[in-house]
Image (spheres, one colour):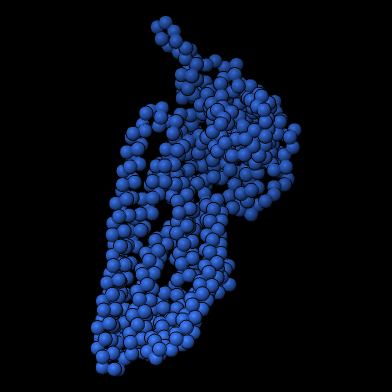
Length: 586
């Protein structure tokens, strides 16, 4: 928690002046019972209306002045808490952006969303309460005890007995509730996960008529969250009645023993009223402290979760090379040197002993069954993951030695899942090149075979894309993501099964356009269709992370049984008596 409060260094003025204003308000509040005692003991006792009126006016003045200082404190607290929350969110978002896929996979996207929203909101509230109440409440308690001792030392023993009893109650509640709040935040993560899955997969859920199942799943998670919340709520709810009971017994003791002293003439009636007021102030201050304990317990749980994200050290650190010059023409554009890769937490490698050289201008096809390591292979080139063994070189330099921006500016990546962002088509096209001209964008759109539906839309390039491209078909999204990668004219173009939603005619037209418009570009195509990659300069056949075949289409038909089987299955046509016609070269 102290680490999070370190952000208050940016708001020193607010963090100092806010509590100071609240301290002045508390001083005024402590003076009021003394003024009230004097009104009773002097003004009312002597029938001095002028004294009563003047001191009554003084009480009003103290109240109004305290209110003004409280408003100023509220302003400073709001400014500091919102500022801390904003900075914290910005820093956390930036830090998440620096994490590799490995660290993001470790915590999970739903949990990260909960931490950057709900958890930071909890911390924001804690900062506001820190400035507004942390100084005021203890000062009122201590001040009330000190002033009561100045009035009568014997009667003030009631305060000294009540205070430790309240402290014990606070400790009891705090120790038992802090662990439960951490559990609650984790259960909130689960609700966030289920909600996210249902919102993103609503079409699938309805297609399989699984609404009832998902409702039951959500209800179970929500009930679990409710039970934990009720459990911690029951513990926290004990705090106010316990403290109220202790203080009210204290007030009874004051009236009882104070009344005896008034009868004996050793204490005045106004002093009893002052004692009761001070005890009431302590009661109210302790209620505030009780709520602060609950609040800070929640916030400490949230702060621990936030710190857990900040404590994640990116496993992939960028190198120092920001420019590559004098590249030898014989140097491979991409080279895998005995590469083995294993995902974190997995005992089996996803890629094993891959060695291949890819030269500038070559088109490489990658094919294999589901889970064979195709996407893993291409994700190692832009260094989304680091190899477990071996090296990946681009232009003869290990990818680990590049600055991220330098390496990734060389690469146009089209992921397996087409991702577009809310905004216009033009906005999305300029992701790779901010100053791209309309002609450059149109050229990329034409190559990607996306010009037909864009030109037919009323807004053309200013057509708005909804969140995640919900207003586009799968094929339209894929073509736009391909165009987006082409706008920057990258040295390396990676198409990770990015034409799977295209019909055969559009797929063929796309391949033809890429062939004639990317002659100086190194193209890597991952595909499930043998027809999409059969004209590539080299085809890599992967099976369980092992390159079982590398060569041209014709060579692999002769030498690679798995490739031959893939081609046979994909070209199979129903015949009388069964059988499959193999895919022929040419």
